[in-house]
Length: 422
Image (cartoon, rainbow, N blue to C red; front, side):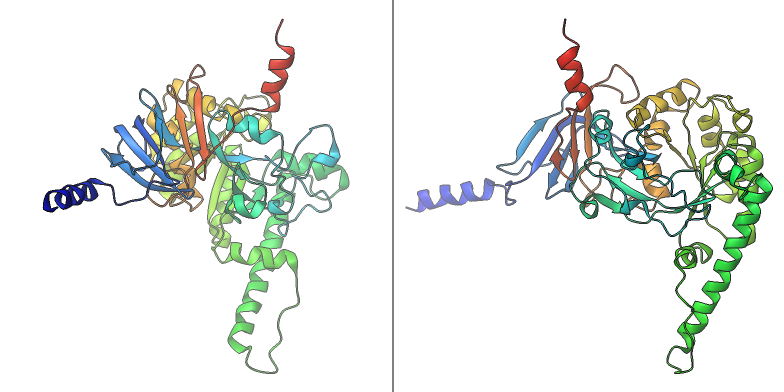
């Protein structure tokens, strides 16, 4: 009996304590956490939509679903830092487009989450190349366009797929507001755009001051609360420095204007596009202003993009600017890793290109504990690739969003399979 009892004790001791039910173990691949060194032959454990553990030679709980990633790269899902995904379904059908609120040149009170469509047909084809999260941004036609959100590309409800509901206030300098509002005699020049920004932000500062005074005196029956003003309320976090302003600017003159506005109103700014940002890379680095670079293949096709160069991302990186790569697109966000590949072809180190699609945008948007990394407690947004993600011939073999494996089919793939056969 003592012998049997001893065998039972040994058996119990050798059984993993942790229950493997519901655990996914991705094993054997080159794990790229993106916030630390690579782990050859590493393991990623996932449970309940979160990353349970990342490391080398981890014990696999009994009952876990094991995914063999040997010979493949395991990395965080990629993030596009500027898109209109979920807001623009069919370019030529106005009823399916919600990216620009065209009733006013200044619309800080609008939030993209109120229009986002989780069932968009754009989403499946985007996920096929390993993009799992996108910054859903308002369009660029208004001087102040509204508030963006960071969304995962899986879920039926906006509430369940939102990583960060309110990322930043979007301000547009340059051509789009002139083209949209010039004929309506609202703003016709860059002078007019900036004057409008100053006017609105000055009013927002005054509104914020009145709110602060009311908060100090609200117990006094005679204290008067400022009247409700949706635009001003939306801008209060901006003028208090609590919400960043994501400034659309290509031309170096517009970038310098953004810097002047930042100094004047104590704004926390993030540059979007930054086609000519390379011209003042050192100054941007000194100010610690991040740049959402791209599209990388931006051509000198307009006056404001005359200084376009494929080396932009590399120059900014080497100057010490934190960069994230964006497509600035809707229907071709799937090209994000290839944009990064183009930046690599013109000098940007491959590891930095991968960071610019993962941990960098996550840090810029304040969610590096949630997405863009493979780390304990982060959302289990994981991509398995059979080669370098930035190479067009590499194939994404599996995508997980919040631990759920995504079906990599899409409408485009279905049409190709139906009509592409001879």
